[in-house]
Every structure is written in structure tokens, then in C-alpha cells.
Amino acid sequence: MAIDVSGARVFFTIPIDFPLLGKIQISETILVSWLVMLIITGFCIWLTHDLKVENISKRQALAEMLVETANNFVIGNMGEKFRYMIPFVAALFVTSAVSNLISLIGLRSPTADLSTEAAWAVIVFIMITREKIKAGGFGGYLKGFTQPIPVMTPFNILSELATPISMACRHFGNILSGIVINALIYAALALASSALLGLIPGAVGAVLSHIPILDVGIPAVLSVYFDWFSGLMQAFIFCMLTTLYIANAAEG
Image (cartoon, rainbow, N blue to C red; front, top):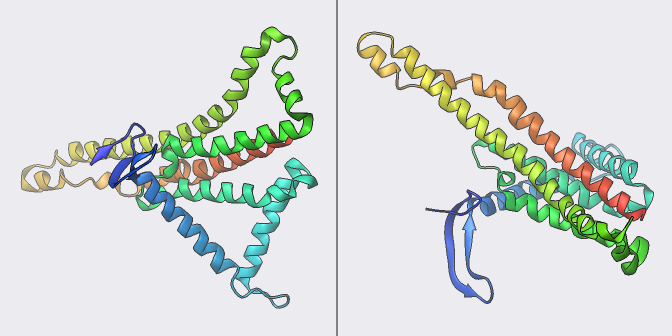
């Protein structure tokens, strides 16, 4: 099984040569990303099934609460004129959150692959640039790179490019570090189990030393932070930065 530069395992390659693309490789990241989209789609269909005006169900109440939360988040951070951004920001948050938390069932999180966050960051960067051009025109956008003095142009360009890079790397680094730390904890507890149970004399100790007993329970406590809290927090931060950057760009 091949490994690409991001560490995502490649499961199979489509043997057809596509123009300019070559052979397409289907990696673990792509497969899990498809699974995430299926989970979100199925959940949305379940939430919005059989909606009513009166005597609503608990499922519909939950759906309305989630929609209201998304509305308040986007409008509160961006203003009423950005109401059209609500579906995008909500989809971005849910996709990020589910991708981060899917590691709880033993799958590799798509957000542990830098290419995932890089794609999101590029989309956000394009939206930021569009808002800047709408606010000041294309000429005004280019002129902004020469402010406050023309000699600052290279630095302003680097600063502009640093926005998507920093967003992608921040999210990716936090998720990947959590996965690495969890893996190290499991390995350390397995070694500790082997060392402690190996002290038991005879065949009993020889058998029990191969059972990572300490791996049961202890990692689950740490997972509350590394998976649940950190995963949801990184999704929230990415969406918060998205709304703030786009709203600031629109102000010119």
C-alpha cells in the first residue's frame, strides 16, 4: 500500500490516464471524506423529514435550534448583509467537526491530511479576495498592496498569502498533534502494561504481559480533550476566522 507525502494511505488507483491529471489515486482521506459527507447528508435528511408548522417534533425542534444558532453566529459576526453566507459557514463547521470527531470510531480524520484544510483555505481566500475587489474595485485591490508605501508591496503580498496558509496549518497542526499524542499514549501504556504485568512470575505473567490492560479506560479520558474538545474547538476557530476575514475584507 502506497503512502503519499501527506501520510494518507492510497487504497487504489483508477487506471485511466486523465489529461493533465494522470492516474487518479483514491486515498484514505478521500474515502473518509466521502463517508463524512454521507453522514452529514443523512443527518440533514433525517432532521428535515416531515416538517410541520404546529405540534413540531423534538427532531424538528433540534433542526430549528441548529438553524437559529447558525443564523446568530454568522449575522452576529458579519452583519445582516452576509446572511447568504449562513449555509456555507454552517456546512464548513459541520464538515470540520464531523471530520475531526470521526477518529473516535477508529478512522483517520480527513483533517489530519493537510490537503483537506488547504482546499478549505483556498476557497476562503478566494471569497476574501472577492469581497476586497467588490469593496474597492480591482484597481483598489491592487493599490492596497502598495500601502502605506510602495516598498512594502512584497511584504503585503506575503501577508495576503499567509492568511490561507496560517488557517490551514493551524487547523491541521492541532488535529494531527492530537492523533500523534493519542498514538504515543497508547504505545506508552502498552509498554507500561507489559513491564508491570511481566513482573508476575511464571506463565501467568508471560501471558498477561502481552495484554495492554492499561490501554483500557485511560485513553478514553484523555480523548475527551484531544478528540471532543479540541476537535470541536478547531472547527469553531476555523469558522470564526473565516467570518472575520471575509467581513473585514468587505469593509475595504
